[in-house]
Image (tube, rainbow, N blue to C red):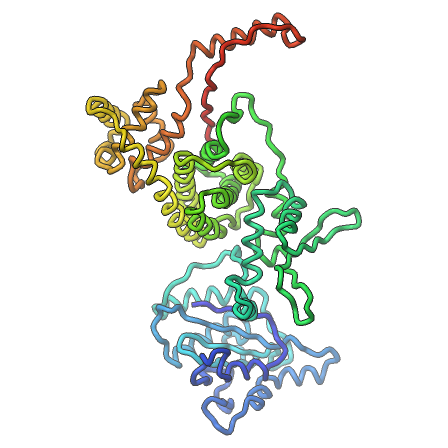
Length: 570
């Protein structure tokens, strides 16, 4: 059950005209009062042909008019409006049940506290099977204004209890991180103009799509402006950026002027301070032994970066930062993925937005590696080969599983659900990307003798899951991957052990598929040659000793195959 308190209004008679009218699409049927502050003597234009809307409005407004006549400053924001709607799958509630629900909501809101005979006047009108509208005038019988601070939170708590008491669909308790719901006016305007999204939703998508391309708030606004979005920055006397608002092209007011929406009204995590914290974190100094493989593509580097999201995430500020950056990486991947995967990945990116924020304040610097990977894909990634893309998508699936587990462990119900919805879209994209790769691998599986040896390696390295792996339809493709890796100098037993340690297999639908993507990524370069590495170090020391850095010439040493970097988990 959803109770959505609307912004305060000033026209009681006008709102009643809507509640008792036909509706914008003739959807209002049999409007009538189901409850009010005093049923005795309350005129109901829906049941009494002699009652009028004006009479009803005057009766509700009496305390307001009395206060306005006694005080110099008139009350004009006195109309409190709260539609209350049941879920589509809920049973039909009777008028008596809706009356009880309305009474509980006005008590929770502070409109008419229980046992208080001097509360505000209110009425509840039912004009459809699945919802009512509560209208109140916010001046009490004693002339004071009601205490409505945090009324939305109290009403939400009351709705959760009503759902239990009436056997209705139980929604999750809010945590103040949700974005604002589109207003009726915004939805009707979008419908009138033929837009699929309201302006705020449309602008939110554009901002999130631009974040992986920007290294600062100024760059972000410039990127959005270049994309045709109206940008209205707010600056201090020094020229420093203090805030911003955006306007959708064609979104004009009645005077033909551009309508602007502040960042914080578009989404709670898109205020200027929060964007600056994400975009302008200090780059941590890299340890000399942990530099990225310069020969790897951005797609491979992104897969490496996802290892910073791991099952042992305990520090909430670091975990939340990495989950926020994970959303940026999903968005960047969606932008650069092949066309046939973009719809699924964009749906995943959109679903993950709620999982990107919680009440835990993120330590954004902890997510620099992930955020840098997202920017690399956005700025310099060429079209990925099928194997690299399938590997990255599999890693994104696992990272999202871990994000869902972390949110669930911290009782973040809405974020957990958002991550699970994201998984549905990501898994579909990963399956589609991996299909051609598996087909190609299966057509060149190794000989029977090699396969028997590899079966032994699987049973020795991963005994608990060996039967599932060997009966997985993808086992022939995995055998090919292991044979290829062995030809490159790797040890299949070691690769299997490492892959199983990086991603638990108990929850994997198809464990052989999981191992394929992991092992292909790990073994993409030939195994390191210790003798060649020792020779390189001796040559480097000799060059330094003979002063070649000052301009002397020396035959270059034989090229050495770069050693793959295994990043430590943070």
